[in-house]
Each structure stands twice: as structure tokens, then as C-alpha cells.
Image: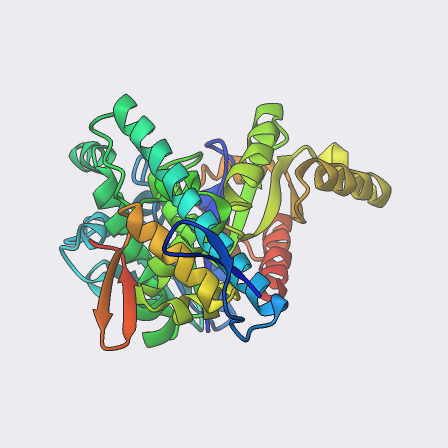
Amino acid sequence: MGKIIAIHSYKGGTGKTLLTINLAAIYARRGKKVCVLDLDFRAPSLQSIFKLGGSEYWLNDYLNGACEINKVLFNYTPQCECSGTMLVGLANPATEALRDMSAKDRKWEMRALGRLLSLKNTLLNDRELDYLLLDTSPGLQYSSINAIVSADLVLVVSTIDASDIEGTKRMTHELYDLFEKKTAILMNKVPIEFLSTPVERDSVYKRFENTHTLPILKIIPCFCDVLRAGGTKIFVRDEPDHPFTEHLQEIATKIEKF
Amino acid sequence: MCLSRSGVNRLTISKPLGKSPTALLEKIRESLDKLNEKMEVFIELQKQRRNQDLIVQDLPEALDVMTLLSLPDHLRKTAVSICKLGRATAQEVAEQTKRARAVESGYLNQLVLMSYLKKERKGRKAYFFVEK
């Protein structure tokens, strides 16, 4: 059976969305069936990256019980130039929708959790997907915790920012551990000089592993090209030989074995 | 041998029950376990009432993720399982959590008493579910 992976972080701007879409594209190019869902209802972003335009149905509608998941999914396989399948589900970016989602009550959130949990059957069992990647809102948001409860693996993206590290540590004990989730950390945007020699790299890994008490899946250096691309590039497709792409390929392989 | 109360409020030695002291101790232990379970429910209900007094509009019966986070570890595991299964017997929950059926049965009934779950009997089987 396939895996559900939630990509989460304590703070915003850690690179969750970019990592999510690039990991999805890697798996699809490896011949896997993949689906990416934008569960960041406070600040939806996948529609601008995938340039998919308007949609009749959004993930908001699926969670509202207004449609089935098939109505929400776009087939991004041709644009991805992959041998597998890549499906994308978007969150509604309209201001009214953001307002509506932030005003939902606990009963609604409970039903939304049920709808999200049922995707394991509809997407992984019935449609035989290999990976379902959930891009989430940072911090302790209802939609993010729903995604974490539904996931088989949680990837936590952190920068070296002290408050980010502190917050990630807190979430490990007060969120991921409580739901007994398999969790791994991706350290992103780490200054390249921290990783210039193998000895330095090893010491950085040990330092972060001791701090987080969780496995560090990968330390990704800060690349100016990635920042320059403004979060819109699918590196795996557009720049397959870029070092950032190589890091992502290693992460994808590690997740397969996790 | 065991002691029992006679009709005139006097303690007398009754007939032997034919059970070994170990069996009797086992029975006492079971009763104490049941008592403990009930005490836990009372404590949880007490906590809920206190919270209700503080936040009147915050309905306690919704089993959303924030409620899951606030549950004690042993109940959270059971509650998450039932959320995933939708509707299940204690046996089915026990298969997920890898705990004994009797233990899960106790926890599921606690969650019913706390109004987070509903229970429905069909023949000899009892099904637990979250009311949507």
C-alpha cells in the first residue's frame, strides 16, 4: 500500500511547498503514482506554482462534503514530463474562502478529519497511488494537525533560525510524539559554509540530531538559485543537474526506505 | 473459607465457596481494576465540567484533533483508532492498537461516557463510532 506523507513546519517560509512539489515530481518521474494536496487553507500557494488557473471544485469543497475527491484533482502528468502520474488538489485562494475556512467550528473540523482519513481508501487503495503528499500550514493549525493524524510519515522542515529549532522541538514532544508518528527532520536553507567539508557536515548532523532527538533526513544548503526562482520552479524537471535537485533525489530515496 | 454477613448483622464463617485463595484474589483484583476505570471516568468528567464552566460555548463532545491532543495517552490511542476505522468493535480497535480487547473495551466505554463516542449493539457485538 502507498504512503501518506505530511510536510509540516513550526514557522512559515521554511520551504515546505517547494520541497513538496519537487518530491512529488521526483516520484512521478520515477514512474510512481503521486498526488499532492494543498492543505494550507490560510495561504494557498500550489495554484500559482502549477499555474492551473481556476477550478470548479476545490479541496475546501471536498472537506465540506460538497463533492468527491475526483472532482478536485487535476492531472498534472503532461506538464510534469513524467512516466508516472502526478495529480494535484488545490485549496481555494479567494479571500472569502480563507475567511470561511478560518471560521469553521470543532464539529466541522472533526468531519474534515474523517474526510481526510478516508483518502487512504479512495486514493491509496482504490486508485492505487504510491504517494499522497500533504502540504500543510505552519504551526498548530487544525488543517495541519488533521494532516498529521492522517499521515504515515511526517517530514518537518526547519531552518537554523533559533526560534524555528525551539518550536520544532516543542512540536516533537507536544504533537508528533503524542500521535506516535514516524517523524523525520529536513534542515533547509543551511548556510553552505557550515557544510563545506565532510567533518563539518558530520558535526552539523550530530548537533541537529542531538537538538531535535529525531532523525535528520537531510541537511539542504541554501542555494541562491532556489531563492532566485521565487518558489515557482520545478527543479527536478527544469534543472535536473542542479545540486538542489541532487539533494531532493537523495531525500526521495531515503523516504522510500524509511 | 470466607466471611459473610448473617441475617442478624453478625459475621459468621460461611460455607467454603470451593475456590482457591488465588482465584478469590484474582476476583478482587478484577473488581479493583473496574473500580479504577470508573474512577478515571469520574476524574475526566470532572475535568470536562470544570472546562465547561470556564468556556460554556465550547462543546466537549466533538472528537476533533485539539480534543484528541487533550486526552490522556491511553484514551488518545483508542480515539485515533476509532477515527481511522469509522465504526468498530473493541476487538477491531485492539487489533490496531496491539492492546488487549478487554482493555480497549474499557477505554471505548470511557469515551462513550465522556460523550465522544456512541455505542450501538447489534446481536452480541457492540459497535463504537464517532457521531458526525
